[in-house]
Length: 128
Image (cartoon, rainbow, N blue to C red):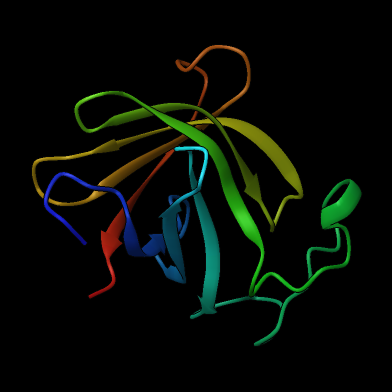
């Protein structure tokens, strides 16, 4: 993971429980957008291999491990990315997303509906 880059493996920290839930690998796609895929489940209240039972459309019933849960992010300005969407596999909802690489090396991942002021933030930590 390069300095100043969101590309790499990140531990997702649940904003409600404080538990580390999974490892998400963020990559840059061929079209220059960023996406995040769940590569490992670390904690789940639904067993070691949870499925996306409440998820809409093409996500419904798929295993969470291997699922792309963050997509369409574009770099806006230095260390800030927006225009994407994020899937909450537990609640089965898709939110608008923006991501900021903080000075402390963590990612601030914000999911929201409508305006960015109304939503939830998680702070993801580097997995390496």
